[in-house]
Length: 197
Image (cartoon, rainbow, N blue to C red):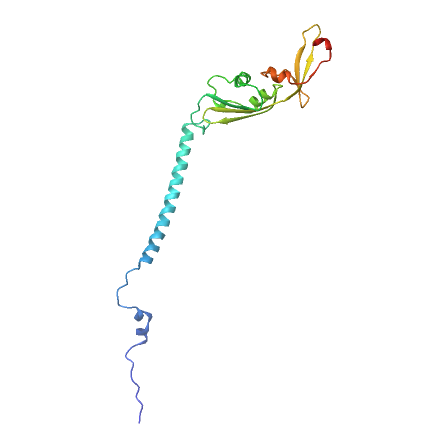
């Protein structure tokens, strides 16, 4: 008895991967997939916008400096110095400090050299230390530390009238401005020549 095999009607070409593709339509995207796609496109657009904006900004700055080739003023419009904020641990008045400073009329804070002002103040023998700062828009702040007198010293020049000087704790000698008479009389004194009293 002969064995007959069942014929396979499908050829090898019919067994390809194309037969696995479903005939059904593609399912719609989920909300998560939509969000991811939107974020991906948004990032690309943002990068393009940033690059474009940076390029445009660089071009604007270049054009500005080509049209205005000069120093750049970052402080804005400057106002003349209209007040001096002053503090001291001694007796010197604000008017005395203003006379020392001699700030030019219509000078702005940026016109003033703070190191020069500080040096000018500290050249006064009664001032031990000075600090000068700008307070924008138009105030100059001055803080000083004065020498403290320890005693009086009477000195007479040749054929002159005896003059009273003050001696500080550091050994400096100065005339002493704006001190009260009560303060001066409370200080001990040194008189090299008794006839000066």
